[in-house]
Length: 164
Image (cartoon, rainbow, N blue to C red; front, side):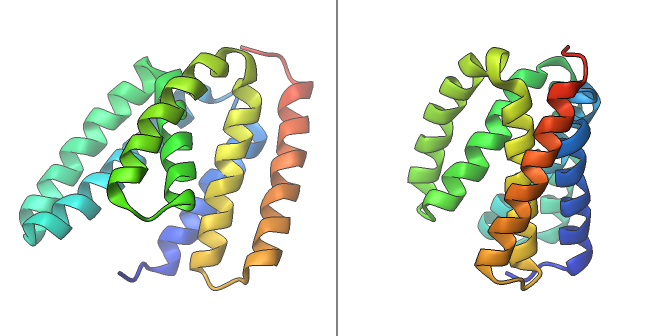
């Protein structure tokens, strides 16, 4: 499946926002990010199963609206789920393993998120940046280095600011 560069550029912008200002903007960023995340997941899976663009679009819009509300109300859960799914999808491409790893990692990350929220937000942003850079055609090593550097600088920035 081919994605447009605009989506990847927007994802990089979202990743940078998460890295640098994620803690300060946790609820609103979580709402937007979780809305995009659920919309993306709904579209990819609905389109692959239903093969109906209209129904897939309706499900995507519904998932975006639900994601926005849940991301605001349950921001630690939303962040934990996005982080866990992204990690699981990097580790394996098997759908069942991705789901199982996502569930297990979400529980672990949710418990730790109270203590490690800045690190989780910055790491999530870095992973989004990495995946988007790869999708845009950058080779793996420069993408990893760039994502790590941005993530570390963003984490330091967040830790300097007041905690929520």
